[in-house]
Image (tube, rainbow, N blue to C red):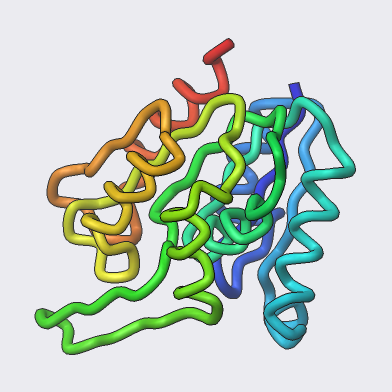
Length: 181
């Protein structure tokens, strides 16, 4: 089994969650959304993700936060994908938090929502979305809309968790996902 890990913004695939994923398999690769990657134009970022998923077959893909957002863009206009996909706290578009007085609108947010509503996002062989119920970067209502529209095979709003889901919870989710056949 091979794992492709796409980090969140400013992440490095060899650290943190990537270290854990690497310990689970002999075949591990990743894409770091580090500052150098993020300096590329948005469409080039998406193209890099598309290239990675097209280069490998039968991967389990784990995408975190903004990595999930880029992956969803990479799945627009694809007929299908033979990968299992796990999205952890994915950024999926606009997010507003009155509590923290913050607003986020990533590039291409309207394009991604339109693609979802028009059924133009490829359904992975198996797809899971897990996010915290108090995640200020991943709007729970938008996550539910994506889970229904793709459709996801599993959708979980994790009680009392924000964008940084507790490590033991993440490891449990990953262990279940990795062992799923």
